Image (tube, rainbow, N blue to C red; front, side):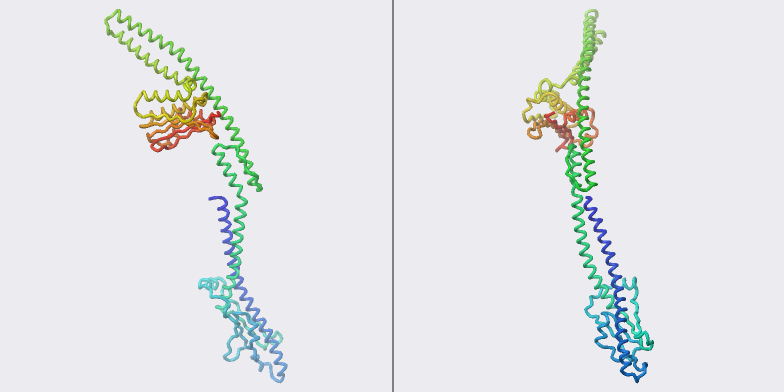
Length: 456
């Protein structure tokens, strides 16, 4: 998962937790607000009844205080206006058949779900009852008791929660959206860094990066740039060393070819001459077909076979014919030599572009690639058709493409992993010239492609 999505997901989790905490807080606050409304209603009604009590006592001074209870005319609209919605007030001592006076509870809110009412009741318990004396100086003046109506109280709490949650939800969505935009804007340079790393993986080591304001991302960008510079320098040094190694290898092969020609060639020629002389002498002195003549003849035959193998070895050790005949002529000669050995498989040579001026190391490398791939296709597969395609690409590419395809099946991944000395050697040659070699699956077999820059 992308880093931006991870941070946004974590932000949403945090917002959800905060929203849940706000819901719990709003529930507790709504529940306590009902208790506060109960106490406030009891306080207001007790103060109002205290004034009524003392007024009646002064107006009817000939009556005893006990005869003023219950307080006359206390159940009025003014008294009801002092009672909060959902709260019921009872005067003590109560008169006969007297019911509590309750505040208006219609339209205070919708009834909540049953699970909400049950949960609140189980966790927070019942609402407390508030009692206030009518007069602190006259204990016999009576008491006001206020208690919350359970249904009205839970409806008030639910409405309070809905009002607060709507606001909290809008704020949470706004915070999540703005924070997500801020995170995406802050981490936008990371995309450039990832793109630079991908280009470095493709070989573009010196990749410029834009300036970043974030200190951490700027440090990462500088580290990536430094890494690219070091990789580019290491690649240049490796290319120089590989070219030097190939030069040394070619010199050693030429030296070995000369030694084989001078030493083994001369000795084999001498052996052949001695064997012919022995065969001729044995034929003169003894009857034809004697054992000595036969042995001498066998020695001559074995010597000729060794000399033929030596010539093939010398041809491979010396510079490829591409450096002498040119790339096009050497490829035609290579394909014709294989065609002359066997009619199957059918070998096609496809030359595209002007190859006349391609010579030197590039021509030799291209010839080696075609030679090695063609040899592997003929020896290690049951191919019925092999296509050798040489294409010169001009313009911005300015490279030579060498592709050998066959229809003999095979697993490209296994071939790439188990490449022998031949493919390893041509891969080193191509890499030394700044090119690339790849092994891929073709329509019915394998495809080996090498791209060699002509600027090399």
